[in-house]
Each structure stands twice: as C-alpha cells, then as structure tokens.
Amino acid sequence: MELIDDDGDLFGVVNVVDALVVLLVLAVGVAGVALVFSDDPEPEPDLDSTYATLDVGTQPAYVVEAINEGDTYSPNDVSTMTVTDVHLTPRGNDIGVTLRVELEGELENDGSIAYDGAPLRLGRSLSLNTDRYTLDGRIRAVGDGDALEREETTVVLRDTLTTADAEDVSSGDEVRLAGRTVATIENVTQFATNDPDRRRVFVAATLRTHRQSGDQRFGGNPVRRGQDVRLSTADYTINGRIERVGGELQLGSASTRTVTLRMDDVREDMADALEPGMVEEAGGDTVARVTAVDTRPSLIIATGDNGSVNVVDHPVDREVTLTTRLQVRETVSGPRFKGEPLRQGETVTIDLGTVTVRATVVNVSG
Image (cartoon, rainbow, N blue to C red):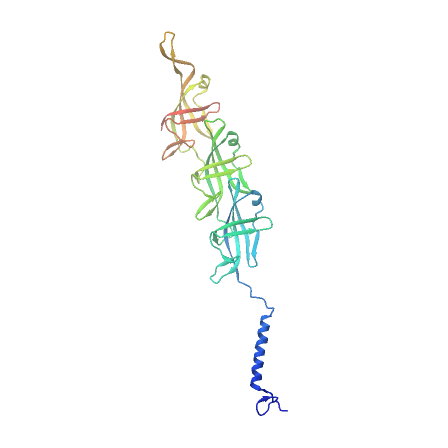
C-alpha cells in the first residue's frame, strides 16, 4: 500500500492537509496544558524601602522598656517594618513614644512604595506587633534618614516646690525614661516665698527634643515660652513653665535697683535682728542687700481714763523701713525681682539667712 495515494490521502484514508491541521491543534493543546500545569514560580515583585516617623502616643513604662532599635514586624510576605530610632518624652504619668522606622514594600509603577497593600500617606495608622508588645501609631513624616531629627534645647523653667523638694534639685540631675536620658538639669536657683514651706525655683534644663513640622517638640508640645514642661526624677517632680528658650540662667543680673520696703507691726526682737549689710544669695550671686534700717514704734490709738483719745507708741510692735539694693531683670513691663513684677504696693520676700523679710514695696528707683 502506498503512503499517499493518487487522491492525496494518507494510507488511502485521511487527507494529508486534514492530518496536518489535527496535529497542529494537538500540539497547541499540549503546549497550553504544559504551561498551565508548569511548576515555574511567579516572578518576584520589585521591593524597595523608605523611612517614616511613627507617633505611637503615650505608653506605660513596662511597654516602653521593651521597645528597641532593630525590632521588626512583617504584616505579609512583601512588607517589613524595622525600628531604627526611638525617642521618648514625658507626657503626664505615661511616656510619649516617637519611632523612626524603615518600611519595605512593593514598588509601584509610579515609583511609590505600597506597604501592606496601601500607600504611605501622612496620618495613616500602622501596627507594630512583636512577640513582646503591640503598638499602633500614625505616620507623621516620610523621607530619607534612619534617625529622628534631634536637638538639645536649653530652657529656663519656673515652678514652686516644697522646701524639701527644692533642696533636692541639683545641677547634673538627669531625667530618665526607660533607661534613656531625656533631660538634664544644668543650673538651679531658688528663692523664699510668703509660705515658709515652699520655695520658688528657676531651673535651666537641657531637653532632648526632636523636630517635627518645623517645631522643636518635647512632651508632645512645641518648645516655646509659656509652655508647660514636666520633669520627674526619683526625688522630685518639676511641673514648670518655660520662661525662656535658649541662654543661661541669669536671673537678676540685668541691673540693680534701690528699693524701699516697709513692714508694719513687727515684733521688737525681729526688728532688732535687722541690720545693714545683711544679704540674700542665690547661686553664688547676691540678689538682695540691706543698706539701711529705720525702726520706729508702731502707733496705736489709746483712750485715756478721762475719755480722751490719744495716739501713742505701741509697747512692742515696730514699724520698719528697709533700704535695699535688689538685682532685677528689666522687661518691657518694668523690673522683675525673682521673676515677679517689682511695683509699689507689691509684696516681696527676702531670705536674709537668720530672718525672712516679707515687706511691701514703697518706692523703686534706679
């Protein structure tokens, strides 16, 4: 039998052209099945990374102590978060935590990075779940750099403390949170108040701040005059108000004023204890000096046996006038002594060592 007969049939049965078509269809089918059931892996996605600042709010100390640089979390197979920097600040009784993190994710066609299936937009909430803690925070900044933009900022704080706490405040004291130093006391000056159990304290402190949206921030707030700052050590807590940002603690060094003070109804023994040359010192500087003392009996109105009314000297009480030289700070609203306005009628307190004077301002001159 011929392979192809005179009619063009293969083995006299199937047309050659039809056979070729059938073979072609079978080949395509086999190739398709092989492609579908092939074990070849899908192409790997293109990955890239960037850095973000994550504000995780306030956290208790036991959680903060577990947070460290290098902690990682992967919400899926192509996304990874790595902690690269940790910044802590006091916020009430808890600790404010700001993290710098590296975020790895899938590279999109427009060059952006999709972390956990979504773009890295400001305000987006992200989770950080490790085997030791779980945190949720919001993106505050995205960009280059694995560290937060930190600065050391010196501020002058003012507060009123108990006398015992005021005596505990010392230069070099460190404020530490979860083993990290967040502030250092550089200098301290304290003054007597009208309450013998309380002292007015001015503290120069260096704060470890970080810059966010153009502001230096500490304790979750911008560092500026009038802002409250809480600094707590094992021995005391300062809930101070910022008097000045930058510079050193130089209270009373601007100028010296002559101030006349008066006290009424002073016991004779106390009046006799006041002498010219007595001083109050703070931080090695003389902030007040008594230059003259004038003592006179206080006057009282007495009624005689015959009904007459007379003005006579009090047998014990005295009226004392002090001439003093006080170190003040000159401001646009007038001189200030120990941070308080120095005006006629105001009361000032001077600690002269053996005696504390609380007197009314009669006159302020140059």
